[in-house]
Image 1 (cartoon, one colour):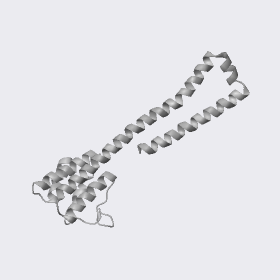
Image 2 (spheres, rainbow, N blue to C red):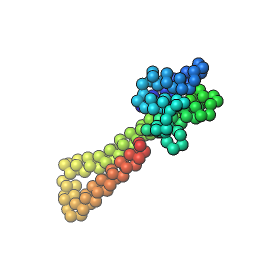
Image 3 (tube, rainbow, N blue to C red):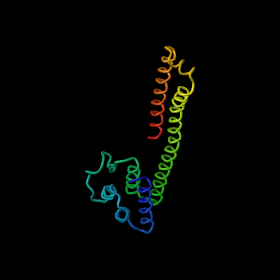
Image 4 (cartoon, helix red, strand yellow):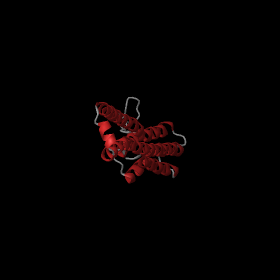
Length: 174
């Protein structure tokens, strides 16, 4: 499930709690309507008779993703601490939406970086090919010993730059 789906689930649970439902009932009702694959684990872990097989050492239910972990911890905190449960769930929902927005922004910026990397890789190659085809003096300079060595060094630098930019963009997008 996406962060927005988890946030919608939390919103639905918070709405149920606001109407006077218990947290366990609200979770079961919301999960039944949301049909999230991991939602059943979250719902059953909040029931009073839930076993410890779906929990970690600290008694908090286990989660498959960081977004699911926010949901699990928010529900666990609301269940264990009581108090204004709806506001706890609303805060977790807002956090999930903020994380999704940050991921979308990082993806957009990495798309710009990927395009820049492609342009910076292609421009020297296109210019060299065009110059080889259109200029006899450029062709003779490139085919000399020094020209071939310079071309090989330039190609290696271009390849290293392409690899380096892929590494940087890959880390930013992840």
